[in-house]
Length: 312
Image (tube, rainbow, N blue to C red; front, side, top):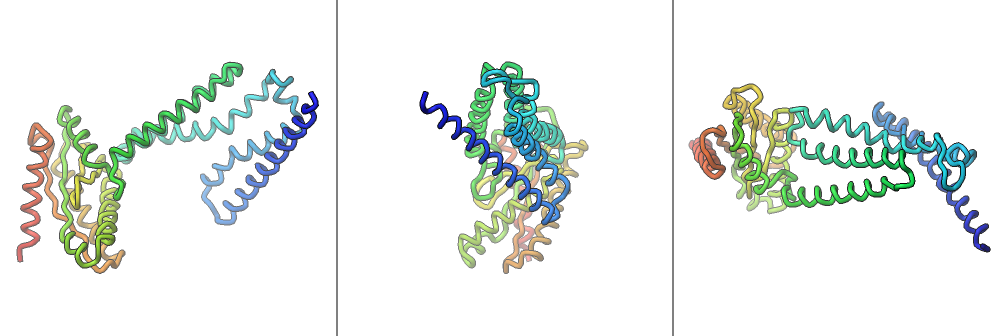
């Protein structure tokens, strides 16, 4: 019809604009990374952008490389899937190693979620490349977004908003699962010393900051130790530890010592005007048959530890 030349002109203009923008972004990103002396991995991340820029140029110059006509793709069209598949493959490999690495135990669920999303895109992208008329890729993207939505909902109800640690609900869920397993594990119950005094003297905002600092210490302590920190409630926290040497009592003692050491370093580096310390009580998983009983035993030891700290 009469609109056909206008339509083709608009499509051609949009293609050329996208081409110029892509190329400019690519070279701008390269100059930025080299200017800031970014590491090699940061520069390699621009490889898909390089491929997209080259493909845009080839598409503008030689459309016949990718399409025989408006409905028939040629062999070279599959090159368009490479820039999209490459980051997915990198994420799949990285998340797979991280998922099975005990040093990233507390981050296993995050890596599992990344794997689910990337595998969906990769599988449906491959199906789309093999059967282009079936439009598998939009289905894969839709399923991936649905998975991400439910993962975000799950994270919202299982994480503490202030500290970004797993919350009480997730703690009980994980501990109940572990009580049914025939494995050696244990918990450490931690309570901040003098937290009320921090709130009274410096305000509740500073109290929140103290909780966040303490949560950061627990994250660093648990990293690489097959352990996971939780916020139990208020100024109480719990660390759940799976044994990887068989001597769970020794491993719990090492974590407690590491917490004390890192809190001392925190007091030296932060200069907050107050000291962040914690009383702790630990118990192995075979000491009781239920989660409340385990927490009661840990709380009794924590009370003894707090009394020792309060003694002159």
